[in-house]
Structure formats: C-alpha cells, structure tokens
Amino acid sequence: MPEARGAIRKIASERIEILYNTAVKVYSSDQGLAGEYIRLLLEIGRHYKVKIPKEMAARICKKCQLPLVEGGNLEIRVLAKQRRRIYRCKSCGSVNSLAFRKGSV
Ligand SMILES: [Zn+2]
Image 1 (tube, rainbow, N blue to C red):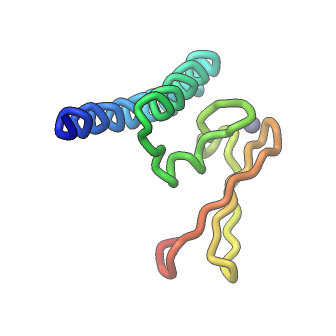
Image 2 (cartoon, rainbow, N blue to C red):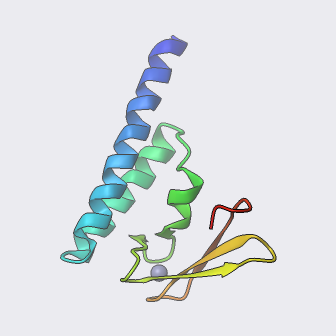
Image 3 (cartoon, rainbow, N blue to C red):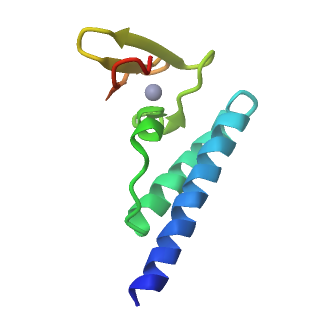
C-alpha cells in the first residue's frame, strides 16, 4: 500500500522536525537530552528511510550528535566566492558545509 507508506513517512518527517526543534530548545539547559532527541531523529530517518533536510543535517554535529545552536556551539563562516556556508562545531571542530544560492545569505 504505497499511500499508507507515504503517510507514515510524512508523519516520520514531521516527527523529525519536532524532535530537532525540541533538541535546539533544550540544548542550553540539557545537552544530554538534546543529544537524545538528535539520536532519536536520526534513527527515525534511518528506519523510515526519510531524508533529513539538508539545512537541518548541516546543523547537526555528526560527531557529538548534538544540534548546532547559534550563540552556542555553532560557528558559521560564509565563503561568498564558493557560495557555501561552513558550519563548524565548536566543541569537536567537525565541519559541515552547505551550498547556498546567490542572494540568500
Ligand atoms: Zn561536535
């Protein structure tokens, strides 16, 4: 039943979104809990074969499995020439990068 699978994946991606937002919210008060949410959302993504949106994936540290939060553990650098944004985790130094379109800085 492809329709049922589509509905399940829709719910899964909504859950991923909710978990990510919650992880960001609790990050400043409880990093352990934020990490739990991130691990859970990655697991839901794997289990239901739902892709984590690129923008969100760039804001998750794959090493620490924590959300990268502005004003917290996130350092953003913009490479205007390459049109890429570099997201660096301040705790472990791991780096994600994301391309952006002209004018969307
Ligand atoms: Zn990290």
